[in-house]
Image (tube, rainbow, N blue to C red; front, side, top):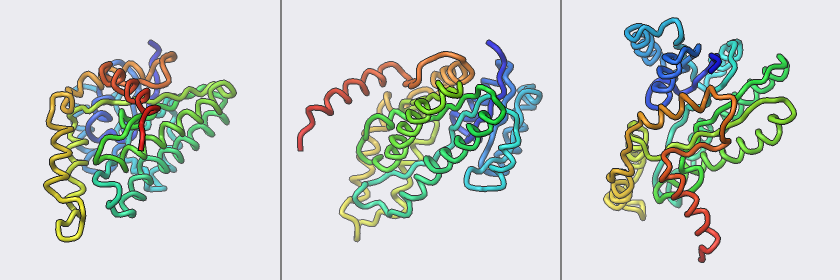
Length: 270
C-alpha cells in the first residue's frame, strides 16, 4: 500500500491513539491531533519509546479552538480521519438541552466545519483527498439511555452520505464512515457516568439506580466489552485504503444485528 499523510483528530486516547500508532507502524506519516496539552507530551513520549517519532507527529488540535483549527489547515495531508467526539447519555426526555447542544457542537458541527475546510483545500489543490468519519454502531440504531449521543452519530451518517454524493464523483474526494461496536476503550463507560452529574432522585422521573441498571445491562456483557484491538486493526487498514466500503461496521455480528434491527423497524408500531 502506498504510504499516506494522515491527520487523526481525537488521537489522545482510545481508538484515535491506537490508530495513530498502528498507522505510523505501517509507515504512514501521521499527525495525531489531541485535545489538551498533557496528551501532547504523553503521546510524544510514547512515540519515542516505540521509535515512531519520524512517522508520528503529535499536535494539539481542539476542534472547538479556532486557532488550533486554522493551524491544522496549513498541514499537508492526504486523509482526514475525523475521530474526535464526546458522549452525553441519559434519558432523552430529561437530559438538559445545553448538554445536547454541547454534544452536537463537538460531534457534528465541528467535524462538519473541519471536513468542509479540508474538502475546499483538496479541491483548490486539485488533489484527490479522503475524509473518514468515526461514527458508531449507534449511528444506525438507538439503544436506551444513549439517545442523544447516537443522535449525533445519526446526523454524522447523513452528512457523510451527502458528502459522498456531492464530492466523490465530481472531485474524486473519497468519504467513508467507520462504525465501531461496543469496544472497551473507556469511552462508553465514561459516557455512562455523565448523567449522574445531573440526575437527581428528588427532581427527575428517571431514578439514578434505574439508569445504572440500563447501562449495566448494555455494558456489563461480553458483547459490550469487546477487545478494541480488533477495531484498531480494522481502522489501520480501512483509513489509508484507496478502495473499500462506504460504511464499515466492526465486528461482523454487530453488522448483522444492525441489519436485522433496520428490517424490524418497518414493522415497529406505536
